[in-house]
Length: 406
Image (cartoon, rainbow, N blue to C red; front, side, top):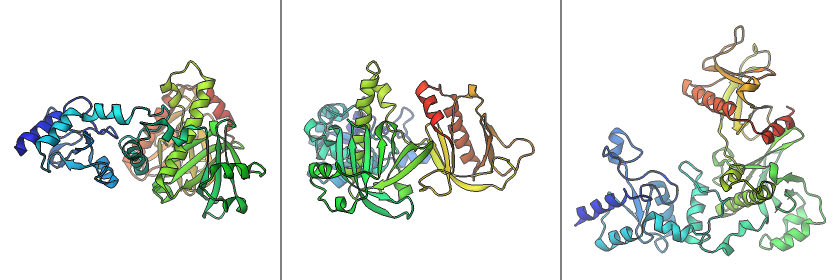
């Protein structure tokens, strides 16, 4: 009986929708060669797939671990290959499945909402799962607090000078196209559970900073900040990128801030480009960094000693800092198209100071000579930079390039 039920479950995994995780889209099941999806060689025998037998959905191991955190009153999880399944449980899985469950739990997912995929930060994945099955946010739009165009609350912000994280009051306004934050101590003493009172209290005070939401990028960076709810804001100020590092004590709160920013930008883009498709608009919302990590670089003469720098490739903007949490980069360059005399080459130009695993980014203004720790790192950076300069350059991107002065 047990073997019959497991065989039935493995057959269900092959059905459309069930062959990928219901929450992150990771591949599940068995491929035509008999190996588990996403595995090769001996690792195939160790691959396990999971399911929530009271929700009727198939899951990857990472999402299954989050379902266990929800509690058995919400989701009851079993391993398909290792646990015992009775007839009733298998019949319910057959009657439901991922596609049918999505019709129920994802009825009203906003277009702008960031659906996590494989490899996304834990906080995004966990809050997506909690929003679906615990809070039922996508079954009742009134539960989506991040769609109003306004958000007010406290976030922990890293100081520009002293590097300490301190509580700051943030106010988001879609109508004004602005995200503000305040340092005033009297504001910080107001209760956080009364947004209307907080908003009213800010109206007679000058904010520490006012950032145009339309120019803002938000990226989850938990490892960099050292907090699972860490987020980085990036925007241009006076011709230079300004980085702000934040976190919240609650994962739900930081994800709501993130999606509130995406919502405000989406609604503004919808007005500005009425003929654009949803896919075109959402592609212009917050974007994860293409790559980040340590590299070594020389100065503009090319014969200086290599110095260790933290590099970030943010879409077309390549910047480098002395420390990953610097508020401003030491330098940055906007990557235009290959037709604008941008190129990436392995090695260094003749006569320039060389170092193992060096490569050169050629721009109309100067050559940027860099070096990676390994051959594989160099390959990844060169591929990422080449993808950036091979993309078509749109007029709005050219406008951003002109704003960068350093």
